[in-house]
Image: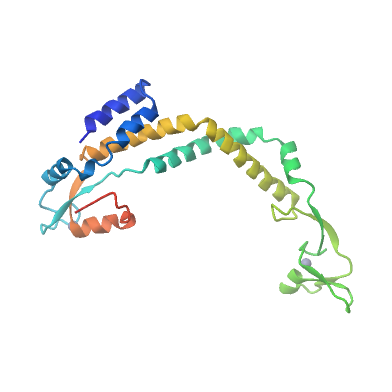
Length: 235
Ligand SMILES: [Zn+2]
Ligand SMILES: [Zn+2]
């Protein structure tokens, strides 16, 4: 079922004699193979008379694939995630402390509770001391009120008054922005690797070597998580 053709495309791609685009274009044109009569015949010839899971001899039986094919998009995402993990430490090193500090800025001046640092304070018009901290009040601090708030800096995007925490968040953000640009530079390598994997999966799947006879009940149970993948037609 085109296994030889895909094997040859894989060999050419590994050898660098074709590009991943060329390989992908050719293999995508074949992707409806499992609707053909030949595919159906080959599958039917492999169906045995005992279920491999529950040993039932009561049919009807189906041919269960023990390997599956991810979509090309899914494989690309996996490869991209691997590249991201591998490149992260290098990209992170390129983000300087100066850039992080410049991105963070000085924060906004805010008034906070002198006891717990919370910004949820409110001024009372008629009582003394004039301020009360809602957080201290909520957690039943013995003296949630105070005379003068403290000045703090609030980092709005990072949602914190803790500068160290805000810097860490800003650094993480700048690194992921730099990572997007870095991944774009590796796009060709990512798609090349994804195409290799896609072809290998396709060969394994189409070869029908990794299959077993299942009764319909066992096949249904096994397929539950992917039941919505209409691509696999077990009938
Ligand atoms: Zn069974
Ligand atoms: Zn407080």
